[in-house]
Amino acid sequence: MKTIGLIGGMSWESTITYYEILNKETVAKLGGFHSSKIMMYNVDFAELEENMSKGNWDGNAQILTDAAVRLEKAGADFIVIATNTMHKLVPQIEEKINVPILHISDATADAIKRDGHKKIALLGTKFTMTQDFIKDRLVKAGLEIMIPDEEDIELVNSVIFDELCLGKVFDSSRKEYQRIISYMKDRGAEGVILGCTEIGMLIKEEDSVLPTYDTTIIHATEAARLALA
Image 1 (cartoon, rainbow, N blue to C red):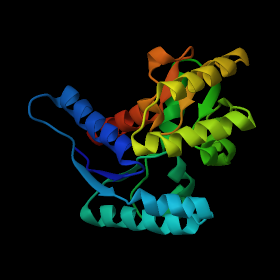
Image 2 (cartoon, rainbow, N blue to C red):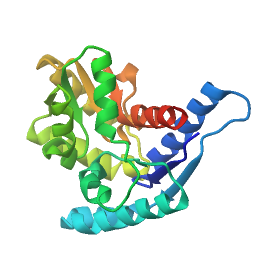
Image 3 (cartoon, rainbow, N blue to C red):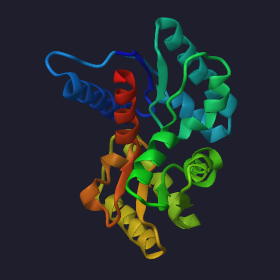
Image 4 (cartoon, helix red, strand yellow):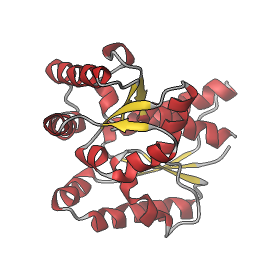
C-alpha cells in the first residue's frame, strides 16, 4: 500500500470527508482491520483565505509547497491537495517536489467521460469558475465547460466562503444552488461538477436535476485506488 500525503484544512470540514472516504475505500478493498496509510498536513485556512483576499497567491504557494515538501520527506508516495481552488498552485508546488500530485481535475474528467457526458456545468469558488486552472484541464480532457452568469457566480462563491467553510448549511442556499443547476440544465448541461470540496455538504445527488460529480468523493476515491494499485 502506498502512503498518501494529504494536504488538508481548506476547509477542515471537507478534509474529514477525504479521511473517511480514503479509509472506507481501503477497508472495502482489503477488508478486516485495514485502513489507509495517510500522512496529513492540516494548514491554517485563515492564512490562505487572507492571502486569497489580497491576491497573494505566491504566499499560498509557499505555504502549500512547504506542506508538500514536509510530506514527501516524511515518506509520502504522492500528494493529494484536498481542495479545488488551491490546484491553481500545482505547477509551483510540483517544481519543489519529486513525488506526483494527484490532480483533482483529472480524476473528475475521467469520471464524467466514463458516464458518456461532455457538456458539464461547473460550480465552485469564484476563482475556480472564472480562472482557467481547473477549466483548461477539463477542456483538454475533451469536456465542454459551462459556468453560471456573473450574479450567480458571486452567489455560489459567497455561500462557499460565508457559510460552508464555516460549517453552516442553510436550506435557502440549497434552493439557490438548485435554481442555478436547473438553469444550467436548461442551457444544455448534461451534468454538474461540484467543484468545491464543501459543496457536497449542501448538494447531494438527490438535490440535483443533473447528475452530480462531487470532486471530493471522486478525488478521494481515486487516491485510495492509486494507493492500493
